[in-house]
Picture 1: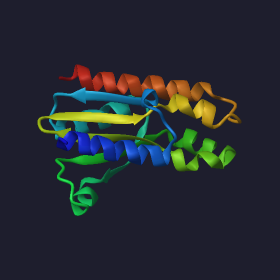
Picture 2: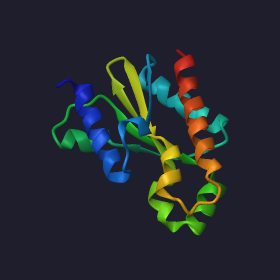
Picture 3: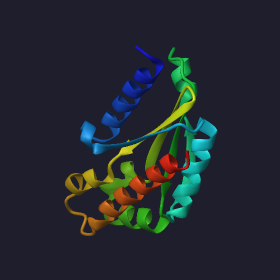
Picture 4: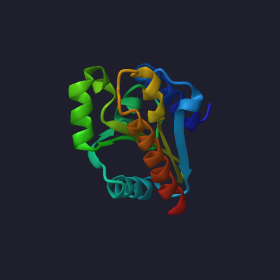
Length: 152
């Protein structure tokens, strides 16, 4: 298997443990930008869409320690603090899913971005009244991914 397939399998398994998703419930983008450029553009686009980047977590060190050879692999956590607080207070069952995150994986001279589609939360959390928020998040992530693609 290629290095990218190994990473994709690991990512898919990780997402499967965090969120019950099917392939159509994932949003992904591929960019010809280098990893550092794509990371910078991603964080800028997240901010331009009104979100705050709360943390960037390195994952490649753990994968390397497990014997996988990786280029770079990060998870970017982001959200709007008021939305995250309100949802956490009203629906504590959502806390493990907040803030949103996007995995960023280097594959040679290209970069792959992948995340769970926030629209799946509508069925997972049926008690949430303002479900339009999940559609809004999906639209924003699609727009962020388009920003990355268009920046090439």
